[in-house]
Image (cartoon, rainbow, N blue to C red; front, top):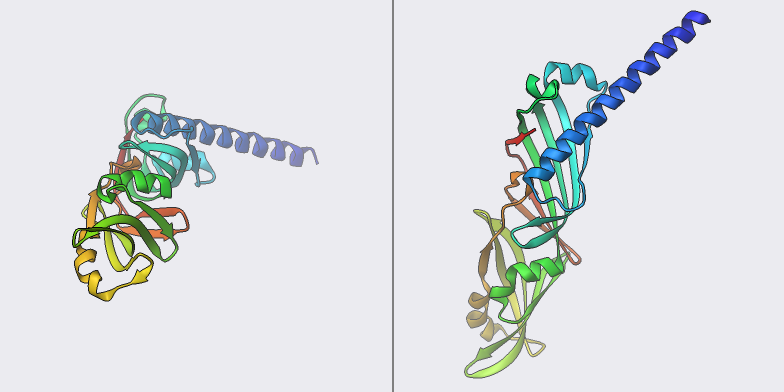
Length: 229
């Protein structure tokens, strides 16, 4: 029984030291990311490797997850940022409390933008109109001119991304609440445009755009990353 209690005590001490080391590493990574990016509220960083110390001593972690709210990017606020770091290489200088560059083989990211921030991003192209985000796409409410007459129009369309630019592709137009196929030919090209996305945290390069009610989700499938620690 005494040997069993001793063994349990050793295991408990080992697990406690492992946990403490993981939390210390997470804190250092959090500070480094805060220093490099405007991440608003202090981000949550979590190491997925357990036990942690054996992985850290090899200088390689399989997965580190990051989540932050209200981050800033190019004058707009990101409702939420999630980044999953795969294959994290930690130099020995960092292991022993010094500084160095943590290299990541692949960083998968996702950014959420509220409807209000999408309106801010597109403001120069909406000409006083507004955009509503729906699960099926977007709807623009604008006032435009047709044959010298000002009319209210609703443009339904889809958001996409191309070469780092958020693109709007219009699909249909209603004028004064009535679909008008004849007017669509002249109105649709007016509302086909794109705008540059600001640099995003963790160097996220967007390759997919999804819409939910009042929310746009920008996703990055894979990118390499280096962070000074």
